Image 1 (cartoon, helix red, strand yellow):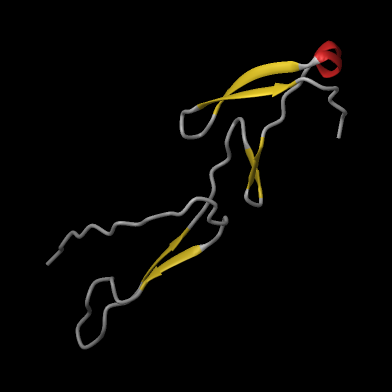
Image 2 (cartoon, rainbow, N blue to C red):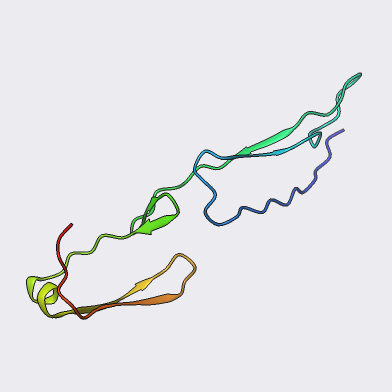
Length: 95
């Protein structure tokens, strides 16, 4: 007999790539045995705008020489949909 069940999983912000979440004894029961564990492995998907380095999100943006010397302001849509204003009023040096 097949039975469906729902398992609610909370994935915390900043959880590292490759991290596993284990739910003990949550799988199907077997004859003359105990149910097994359910193990979830977190696998990051590549993003077109952001790259993850540790707990930080990195975004690369090209700016003109004029913007680098006089200041720049632009908007970025964050992963949660919020608009971020990026503003720098001093000289920006290359890294």
